[in-house]
Amino acid sequence: MTNASTPAPRLHLGINTCFAVKRWPEPRDWARIAKKELGLDVVQLSIDLLPVGFDPAAALSYAERARAAADEYGLEIHSLFTGLAAYSSGLLLSDDAGDRAAACGWYEQMIAVTAAAGGRGVGGHLGALSVAAAADAQRARALIDDELEAMRKLADTACAAGLDHLQFENLAVTREYGHSIDEAHAVEGALADTAIPWRLCLDLGHPAALDPATPSGHIDNWIRQSWRHTPVVQLQQSPRGADHHGPFTAATQAEGTVDPTVVVDQLRRNWTGDVYLFFEVIHAHEQADDTVLADLQESVATWRTALSGAQQST
Image (tube, rainbow, N blue to C red):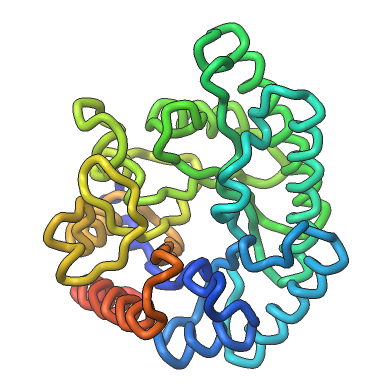
């Protein structure tokens, strides 16, 4: 927790490019929207925008186009982040050893893609236990230990590639290790000595989907924690009992669990350093494109209002 002698955190507002999936997939299009339509200076590149199949050559080509577009529009590509495609997989917690090795190899490729795009970090969803594995405490522990060992090795690879951090996300399913405050602290502790830091990517909407009778079911409790490394934050609005990845509009604010003004105040009270805040708003594919853009503009305005009271850099 900060005190009177601790500098207030510097809050940077940006956007995850998941909004562009199947709408504005070309880098020059989403870069223009982020800069010209939304007035933002930093993005988190969604891996869902990479060519299907994750062919290394095609992915690297996209990364180079993304870097050029970011340079053209004066954007920073802060990091790359797993999207819905990777979220469908058990990844580093898969039951099969071959599948886990393949997931580790895929992450190694994404590290190379991140470096090519000019990003500083990559991460997100690391793994999910199957129902059968989660029901067997010994098996679950073995898989989690294997995941943590893979994360140590990935930190070595990322350090060699010139990245300065990796990210693990708090997720909304109990079989996804790191979903709770205690588990997230355990990840940080187990990886405290890695070549570069593993930072928590704190999704503000995920606690809404957890049991409200537990501390982890409330975003306030996550923000009040003392973390080893200042987390990255993802902004999405969800009502209690769901994980909607909604925008911050008048309609969603009425039922949502995330109050931007309260979040900004708590961040200022509890965190230090540079804090990157990325909208991770995911509309239904059938939603009208004009509505998507209008919702994003309203969301940016909502958070700029919250941030302006704190006189922070956006």
